[in-house]
Length: 613
View 1 (cartoon, rainbow, N blue to C red):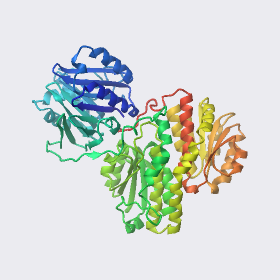
View 2 (view 1 turned 30 degrees about the vertical axis):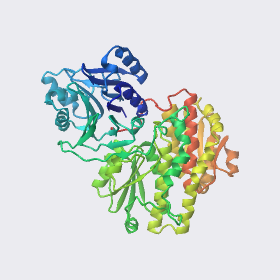
View 3 (view 1 turned 180 degrees about the horizontal axis):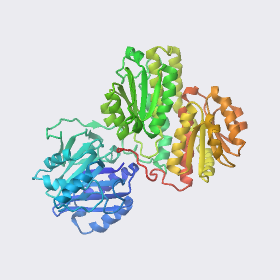
View 4 (view 1 turned 90 degrees about the horizontal axis):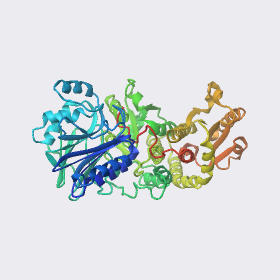
């Protein structure tokens, strides 16, 4: 959540800042601002609302002024935490004498006591934010060296923060610091760029340095110096991002979400590539866990938030069935505080698209403290969970911009499926021929997803009808229930339709009271061993007037006699239906949101990367 961009180079800074902030809109925000430095000092323009409003204010302020010529600056999109989304609370913030401009992601937990202390010494505050304490602290610490002043302020701050700072006295320098909130420095030729996420850098460079916690970057046109909190230099070799600007664009689609739904076949192929051995079994060379260690595993924890946690629910079924290990799926914000019992020889699988989710990272550290081995599943190289984990499996999904996750989910499920097969092989619970069959079926999933996507027009027709309703229920059993939970999340977060998912066997335990004439019920019926029970559940809701849309495997003709409408997915192993079955649910949510006129890529009150609690 929130976005930071900084620039030092030969170009006018404002267009770079505004372009970068636009590329970070998916992170969620309700105000925005920029600050640039030049011979006349610092100039700040900020506003509540969208970037279009900021661009108008910049244009009005910049005519005939040094604002448009400045080649050093910082920008920010803010998602309100402390203080309402107003012009005054928007970033950047300055202190009493406007000699420093600061943008900040994260939360400074001790801001109230710092504010009281500063006010007692005569500092005057102009916002309700936690961020504003930083420029005031800099005023007290600055002795002609901006980086030294930033390092002096760091120990005073408690919480998570990513900061970018400008000083009027040092007009060609941006100083950045990271503490549990992501920052990336793009290395260019005669220019260097700072951002809180990689897409903002891609038009200018693919060579990046990902800052680690406690590191300070001094960014100038001629180069970047990274130090620790004590000022000691740190040698860092830039990594090359395997994405290009076109991947981060819409490629002709109306929304990023639509593009990312249709990118899933490629993302799935990329994720499985290189992870199949010559004999057709699973090969996860990235994992250092030895077969004898896998055989000793007593428990697996899957710790994640949101969509990633829903992928973990599918993973639980697969690991328990194929590897015979008990699995516990925990919402990270609950796991980190509930004093979990972690037995010896436990594996903790942390799942995060961004690799920066604050609660997931805290859950990782809690599991490690209790003795678990950590395996991260993430989409971002060099992210916090990737660095903290013992082993990492990357999803190779490419940039995911829409707030509502789609290809991250399916690639996470793909990797969890491969992991379950690999563990089954290592533990001897899965024979080689069974493993080869499952891997062959996994390799077929991208094509099966393409077949589901070919039904887009028909699914849009159902979604247009669905958009007229305010309540939708999802039911399923086993893996189908896990997929139903992800389906209801997609629908509610982008269309704002109230949606709930239930295990179908729970209908009689309260949910049937809400099923009235015309209420939509989306029923997943892809598990043969649970099919007859699901058909009975469909009959229960139909008897109360529900409109039933079923998701079923092809050739299961009896489902069509029970449901009002059926979306067919290609026939596959019932353990692997989660990937093709979720795609029609993604499309239903997307088209319903479009029909209702919602801001699909940037749903209200939500952010892509949740880097605070």
